[in-house]
Image (cartoon, rainbow, N blue to C red; front, side):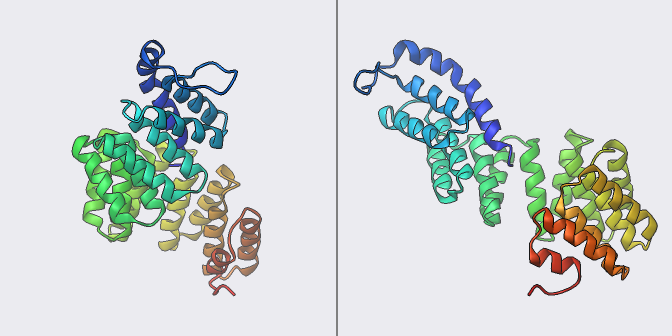
Length: 293
C-alpha cells in the first residue's frame, strides 16, 4: 500500500492527459501573481503533479487546492482529491486524507482507485469494517480486482473467518495462479484451520515458484517448527534472513524459535540485531518469551 502514492501519480498523469490537452485550449486563464503569466486549471494540476513527483508535497498541495478553488466543477476534480489524499497520507495527516477521499468519491462514487485508497487507509487506522465495505464495493464492480481480494481475505483471516478468507484467496489464485501473497495467505489460513498438509504443500509450492521470497521461507520455517522439524526450520529461517537481512521481523521470528529451543544466547543475539534494525522493546520481549518492562 506504500506504493500507492506512485501509482496515483502515474494513473493520474495518464488519465488527466486528454483533459489537460483540452484545458490548454479551453480553460479561462486564472489570475496570476503580479508580473507573472495567467495560469489555467490544467496547468495548476500539471504543476501540482510535477511537485508531487519531486516530493515537494506542500507545494503540490497548494497548487492542487488552488486548482479546486478556481474550477470547482472541473471533471478531473475527483482525481485531484485522490492526489490530495495521497499527499495527506504521506504527511501523516490521516483524517485530512480521509476527507479528501470522501470528497473525491462524492464526485465519482464508483471510482475504484479512490475506493482502494480509502480502504487501505481505513485498514491502516484499524477501521476494518469500513475498509471491508470499500473492498466489497470494488469487488461488486470488478470481481477479479487483486488488491481488493487480497486485502479482504486478510481482513477475514484476522477475524478467523477462514471460509470467507479461503474463498477470496482462491478467487485471486484462480486469476493469478502464482500470486505470492495469496499463496502464503492461503497456506496460513489452512494451517490455522487445521489443514496442515494443505498448508505445507502450498508453502512448498510458493518457495518453488518464488525462490527469493524471504516471507515464503519464514512461513515454511514456522510450519516446520510446529512439526518439530527443527533443523529444517533453522535452515529456512537462516535463508529468509540471507534474502532479507534488513528485516527485523525475521530476526524476531528466529529469536522466538531459538527461545522455544532454550537456545538463549542465540535468541538474544537475534534480538540485538532486530533492535538495531528498529524492533521495539515490546517485540523483543515477546520474542524472548518475556513481558516488556
